[in-house]
Amino acid sequence: MSRFGKKPIVLPQGVTASFEERTLTVRGPKGVLSRTLADDVAVTLSEREVAFAPARESNHARALSGTYAAHLSNMIAGVTEGFAKRLEIEGIGYRVEARGNDLALSVGFSHPVVMSVPAGLAVSVEKNVIAVSGIDKESVGQFAAVIRRVKPPEPYKGKGIRYEGEYVLRKQGKRATA
Image 1 (cartoon, rainbow, N blue to C red):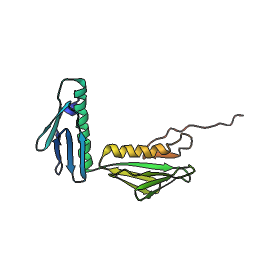
Image 2: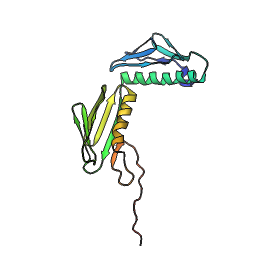
Image 3: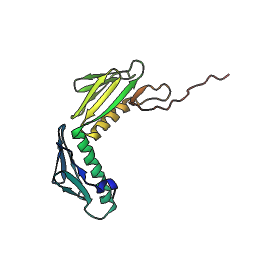
Image 4: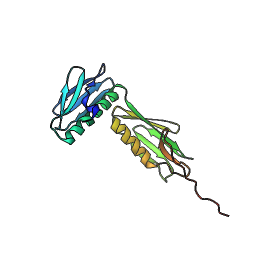
C-alpha cells in the first residue's frame, strides 16, 4: 500500500464529502465532483477526514487505495481552487479564436479546425495563448492534450501548439556542403 494511501485526507473548510453506493462525491465552493470506486477499496468517512483501505489482501486492492486517495486530493483541489493548463501557439499566420462554445484553430491547414469545448470547462484566448480551466483535473488535461494534438510543435522551426514553458528540442536542418 502506498504511503499516501495510508494517511487520512483532511477536508478543508467549506468542502464536504459523501459516499453512497460506491460513489464518492465532493462538494466545494467551485462545484461538485463525483467518482465511482471499485469494490476492492473500503472508504471510511468521518466529520473532516476520509480514509481509504484495501477491502481484501491483494496487490490490486492496495494499489487502488493509494490511487483513490490521490484522486480524492485532486477532487478537493478542483472544487476549492480549480485547475488550468495554458497552451502557446507559435508560427506565422497561426491564430486561435473562441466562438461561443467552439474553438477555431488556424494552424497552417487549408481549413480552420473547429473544436467544441466540453461541458464544465472554460477556454479563454489572449493573443497566442489558450487557457483551459475547470474543476476536473482529468478533463482539463485531456482537452489540452486534444488541442495540442492538432498541430504538435515541429523540431526544425518550433512551429505548432505547445504547453506553456515546454521546451522543444530543435534540430539543425540541412547544411550546405562544399
